[in-house]
Length: 147
Image (cartoon, rainbow, N blue to C red; front, side, top):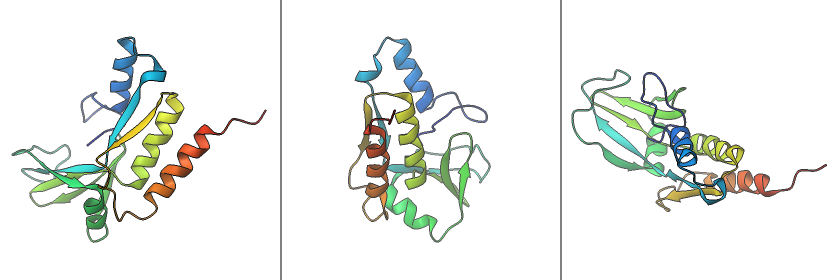
């Protein structure tokens, strides 16, 4: 999970916290590129409580697989972390989808850092309109504002 914001019931660690940490260490904005994962993590848990108690290491699930699963399962959205997730009887899958990636890119643009990168490319294969939406956001952010 790559929470955009931290806070209860989660820790403070988030994309926002990480960016502020680099800035506090003196990294100039024009040198910072925020990396976003195109995968999620399926955590084995005791039950479906949020936040859950992990019983083992989670396994990675590509964005395309998670988005496909969300079409046949109930998907939820955590308003603090700004992340989608699904609950199973003994696990929780926290992942990114096109909407959450779009929100992160818009936030990155608002923060005026050098840009965004993804890992790992091809993990988004089959996700409808993913690259069209990424292109639309990044093209809008590179256009000069009209006076």
